[in-house]
Image (cartoon, rainbow, N blue to C red; front, side, top):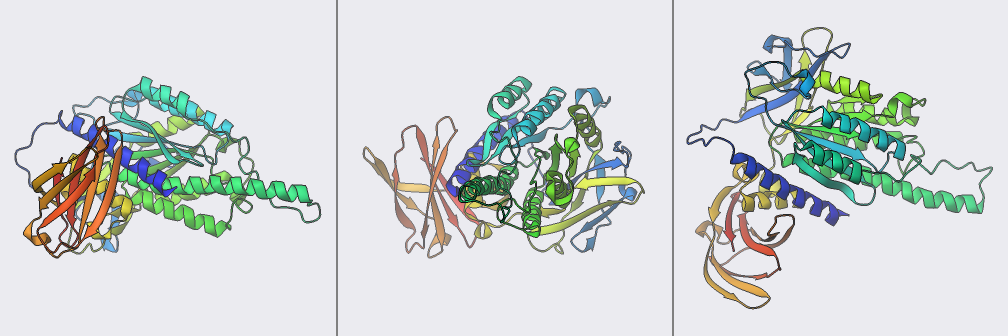
Length: 472
């Protein structure tokens, strides 16, 4: 399962890198730039009735970053709206934003998925050209699955929703608690078999959401997740854990999504039809996930859901403040509150500065290496980059042998040597890594030829956070 998740993440990273490169060609060239580290926090503001609050300023906001009360910051309202019908006249150019349409097909039933598709298509149809949609699903066996995007082509995303999003489950949770007085050998066997299926569905749900953070981190721009799900119903009987166990898992998922800088909206089209309450209801788990993430839980019929989404998105703001040496560590807790009475704010509850290379996990490192090869923003922010030169090359039918000259500061240091293959249409990537402590500045590297793929070598000095690249 881990290998499947890694493959998904690398392919999606390639898609975003190529898309970002194409968009960068449309941007004006900046010849000189002064770099100042700013923290930017997205938030939405509505009143008690759900109507957008459009006139917030600095004095209306109470901002805390870890234990630091932030006094100097900027609050600005973003000049874009979700739908064409809510666009107001403005001379400010609307800004691009990325909208993840995320369908839970691991736990949600067929009827819920079908209702979700109707709502998603309505959202897409009413969107303006500045919304770039990314279509994904949480699959029980395949995990987080990417289908389409980023694209503002409505016809393309609508066609993908119709064709690629589906569920095969008529019931939420098949396995229930057994009654010891009525249990039989056959019912016990059936219960055990169904329990296995439930555990697969549960694992697919949580593993997919954990993987989502890698996809979100590949985008350095406004990003929002619209997750269509009915949640974990009857969690006392479902899967392997207690209520507190599932609350811990949901809280952990919320934290990971938050650290990517994305705001989570959970849409449950079946919530309005629920008669169950508390832990027996899927609504309970999804409300909890939304609360822990700082986002919003929305339920109801398609007209109600889209109306609420439109209202929330009209009141989109960002807070910006400069970094400080006092802000230590990687992950920081965020608190954005309104000083005005009767205003509800939805925002992230944590942000991540981003790990250094030596502190990254395997997938995070491979994403970074792809950014090095494809000149993504992530590589420039995390590594000092240079070129790698070879002094000798030999090749045969199956592989190429290179002799490379390393920088002097790589000598007797722990380095990671990556062999990276990217196919010519840039829809697939394969990565291998070797750990070395070179005794000489010249090293020999053998790299296999793969039909239809271009080879790249990246060496990373772990202690100095520097990398050198050679496109072969």
